[in-house]
Length: 251
Image (cartoon, rainbow, N blue to C red; front, side, top):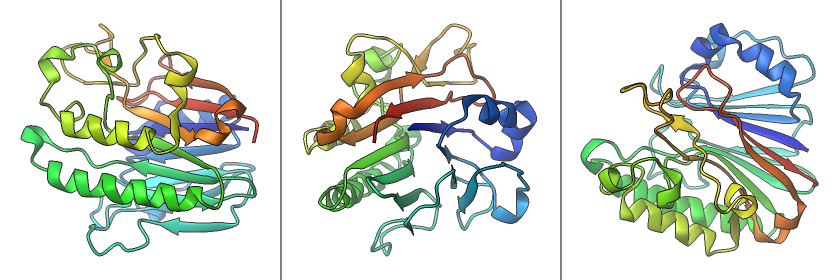
């Protein structure tokens, strides 16, 4: 099975930059998108062989996620089970398949000055609870823009970003806690020493200079880590400030 995850930074924008060609060429079983910034009625896509699912934020042009899948899921859930503590930002899609759960997420950014860090910490706690509950029933594949570079190897300039959103001690600790609770970062599992990034700022020629961050992940239940065939970062694919990441898994 091949699963793609991509923060497209605006689905309508990336459609003008070769997105459909990419979909046809990659021929994935499932495609998970983040930051689509669109309502379903704003999108008219002909994707032969795919069922299309959209989860849009209440605020127009903001956040939002989507999944295109060749196999219809057994069940679909959106957001957390108890969503009273969370605004409707279209950030989580949980699909059940025969042998696993798929969670597609666009994790909230802690923002400049870590203004939204407290909310981010709450969100991370609820996501861990969500993943652990799913994992009691079936293995989990968790993917998306998780908005954290866990270790110094995961970004170009760790020393100058120590207290910035995406590389704060608090966010990194939450990722470490997740991975200590029965989950595996598939890219680091296969490539412990490889330096590769999935996001680059639009400023300062960051992508040209490869001054990036690895903040897009495929994380799986530890008990299926041996089924992972490959975990790829397609940094040759343009169209967004993120590039797609790919999981190939025998499940």
